[in-house]
Length: 569
Image (cartoon, rainbow, N blue to C red):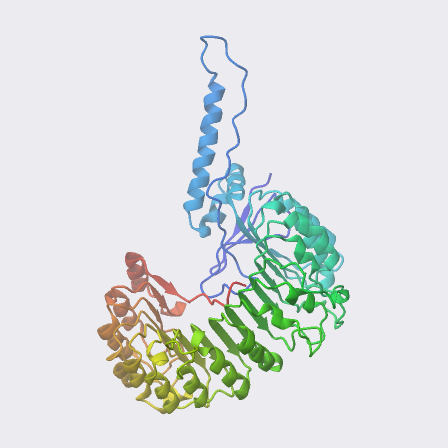
């Protein structure tokens, strides 16, 4: 067996292991700030401990002769394996490439200790899909204790990477029954037939992410009794424009449909004419979290009535770039989402739909996140702060996080009116990202922080003309911040860090000053040294000096880019 070959680059160490099948690449953890890049490296997580290989059996010794030396040798080897795997579990993921170079035994133990693996399939010539699938099958036999697997394809054409072949290969692998999370992201769609064939072997899955299913069908979900989280991108290169579905015949089914165990669902690219969604909506009565991305409908035609079937138990709803269908979904949510605590709308929602939703559901919301809401006006802010009516009971306000981004129509008067209400006074997290009103009215931030006494987290990112004087005045009345984001505030200098250190140096835990070119390294080092509770500073790599690294190491502080987080998918 040939020894592994290691090639190291400055930013992305890459390890090609043999005797692993040729063409598969294993990556060390990716650089900070790039966790969303599927083609980048991914950290490996390890099993706490894999069963050790039992020592070779030896025949019983004669009476009085004692045990044979081979027994002790076998016991020592097994104990050594156990200890090594425990050490592997404690080491950082970046150490994996070096560990695999020590010996074949260490490589084998490292693989046996791996519970989470990301594979990037290289681009190959059309017609080579069978070879790739065969190599994947061999590779998976080396990882007997995987619980999470991600397979990403870099094929130039869909024909070079057969999604069906990859899915069937994973389903046929010995480790299939152990998998609890699978992300299969080839550049071609998978068929319902291959899903029906593979799902029985993958019955332990609790999380599944697929690129596309064509023809669109969801009946195979019944074969995954433990599935709690499902994401469908529905935008593979090989997806055609047909709206037909193998679930079309389900149309008139009554209410006796069995409820799926799904609690989290993310759908991307759904069109109004897509068939088969009605079958899914009728069986999603247990949904807690729903995300629609770049959808122009909810399937089964514009007059579909089944979508509302999944809304009653929702706790969180996200509408991202769904302008064509946002109004309809918001109006349905206003009537049916009685338990909703979180709403995110990105680029969508008319003035009337937003107002009706806020009037009916704002009192129960914990988080309201509106990004690029072109029709958000002051009257919406007044509706958020209005006293809710609960059949004569005392009014309650649950709003703790208000996030507004690029809200060009709201004014300082609207925000002040909200801050004066009981709902505004209870806000603990406020985001005014790229909001013109912050730059137009310098005294607004000071008023808001004085009125919102419970404010702990503040995001003022991408307000480019924000200056040190405004920040200093605001901080003088806001001394309990634990998290402040000033990303892209190009007008700020080191004076803002001095003010922040003076007023919040004893409480601040997270600071984002990336893309603030007027703040120099010396001010960053001073702040990191004197802020007593700071545990994460988000800055560009070019701002990280050796002195700052030493301070961070001494205080156990994270420095560098913040990994973006867009949800569980």
